[in-house]
Amino acid sequence: MTTPHDKFSAAVQALPLVAILRGLQPDEALPVGQALLGTGWSLIEVPLNSPQPLASIEALTVALPDALIGAGTVLTAQAVREVHAAGGRLIVAPNFDADVVREAVRLGLVCLPGVLTPSEAFAALGAGADGLKLFPAEMTPPGVVKALRAVIDASVALLPVGGITVDNLAAFKAAGASGAGIGSSLYRPGDAAPGVAERARRFLDAWRGTRTV
Image 1 (tube, rainbow, N blue to C red):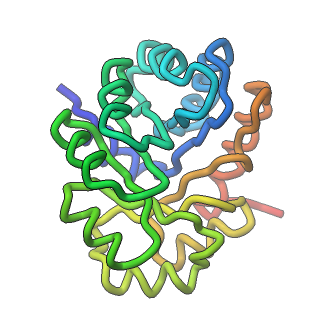
Image 2 (image 1 turned 30 degrees about the horizontal axis):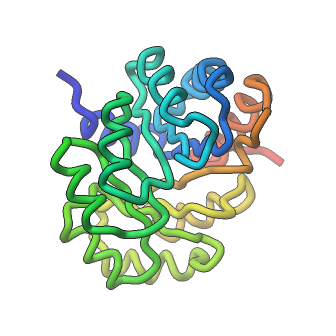
């Protein structure tokens, strides 16, 4: 049986980019999710400050069993339980809250808390985090990522989020980022699936170093 952690490990090897679908409507979830999966993306989060996020998460989980679907902006242990009940298996937060991480671990979910400093990073890993969301990346340019990577083991997934574009993704990768979370550069509320798919392909090319100007 494939576990959420198996899916996460496979995605980190294949295409470690997390689609952040903030503002997604439930009736948009399937076409957008299918467009992403069709371009090789398998990590998808619906932030909990989106309209009816649990409905979107449930629909995506049912329709895309090979993807790792979950929620972003998860701020409480109760929210972790609600995401789990909806079928979500990925928990992402803008901050580090030990209760959130421990509840995700208890339920067997992949958890990526937000950190900004080495102290937060090691506290999150000590609580059981599966990887680290480096947020906001506007405050941690590639040089900072390189410095953090010098003390954070290479086996730990380090994913900058916030302001990541096709133009700066390669620099973050070269500095030691394991991947990235992509928000408004990939999806804005109301975007149609074909446009999302096209932007997803551009990010894929940027990550793989096959992008042409």
